[in-house]
Image 1 (cartoon, helix red, strand yellow):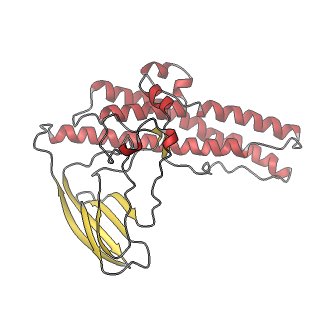
Image 2 (cartoon, rainbow, N blue to C red):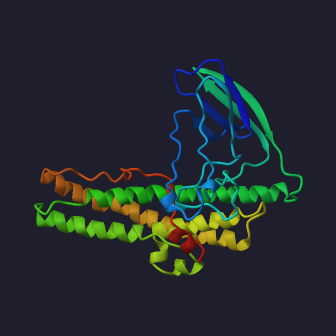
Length: 301
């Protein structure tokens, strides 16, 4: 619980930054300008009194309390849901980000260009007997999964944007239409379709697509976070296999961006048509997409 008091309303946005004192790396950055996440009840088969209200940093005058969940940002999964282990009016969407390790953290509140800093010591729950070494092993694998999910998610948003840009008018020359159709097919093969995940999927082409791999990494991080304990041998092996498949798909996407898209852009330029931007993200890209009941059931396969 982080308490702060503002004598007068802040003219501009105020920020709250949490830094790992040992490494100097930023763990979280909050701003009063952040847009609170919204929840559409139609997308969830849970009572809305489960849901944790959006936590926002207030820039108004007066006394405020901001709650930080001692975790890194949530990973970039395509689907999230509320767990059955609900807490009345305080149930967050899962999966959550990696829980920070015990240690020293620096909290900095910045208002009107002036910063105020306090130190925070995070200690281990004395009832948990997991060793610091095992905690770190869990934390490091959690962060590796989050990094893999970020790469997967960003590539997916670029692919979706590409496919939207490839909708060429019927008046376009036949050569351009064929090149766009071929590129669309290759992009679709890399992207794949969403759904649940199981170990058997890795042996299938569909199970190695970016959409399915996102589900696989999401299922893995959810299993890893069920207890404060070292990752199992199976979890470590599964990460290695998922990450290998991800690198294959990212390599295929890189080849499209370096060869197929430039070739199509050359034709589009000659025809006087807008070119394709492979780095553009899909409109409204967000790492906190809502999950339907069907998605949740598939993830439990």
